[in-house]
Structures are given as C-alpha cells and as structure tokens.
Image 1 (tube, rainbow, N blue to C red):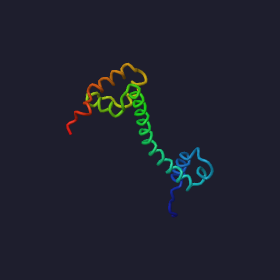
Image 2: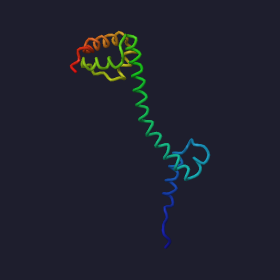
Image 3: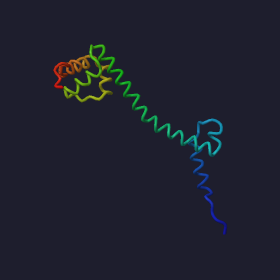
Image 4: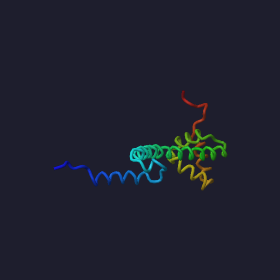
Length: 125
C-alpha cells in the first residue's frame, strides 16, 4: 500500500495562505514561497504598527495639551506636575478632549494645577 500524503489538507492550508496574500501584486500572490514570505512579513508589520498607533495617538494628545497650556501661559510639563500635585487623575486622551471641547473646564484645570504646584524656589533639595 502506498504511503498517504497530505492531499486535501495541504491544499486547504495553501488556500488559506493564498487568501491571506490577496491584494499583493505579481509573485507575492501567485508563487507559494513568495506568498509565505509576504504573509509572514505582513503579520510582522501589523504587530509593530498596532504598537506604533498607540504611540502616535499619545504624541498627538500631548501636542494638543501642550498647545492648550501654552495659550494659558503654562508649559506642558508644569501642567502635568501640577495635576499630579493636585491629585487630579485624568489621562492625556481625556485632557486633550477637554481642551478641545470644553475650554472653560480646561481653564479651571490649569488654575488648579497652577495653585497645587509648589513654587520652583521652595523645593526641598
């Protein structure tokens, strides 16, 4: 009796890879080895960019907060330090949304941060 080979299971596995390579051009969607390389590489890019997206959004929020605090005569770092001293726990996403949508509330936050922050000359160093 001849030995059994993978047969249908191999074809089904290849079909899954080829479906994942859909949208590529040329050999990257027609040749088996190139398809595998393209799909694996795409997975690596997807993994990396899921993390880069989080990084990019945080940079955007910080830029927005920095611009809003600069308009009110305060630096970003002093604003964040003042919020921490005042025990106000708002993440940067929410702070940027408040700065855009509700400037009066953001003004109050800046004043609270300014009041809670110890003066530069009175540090216990």
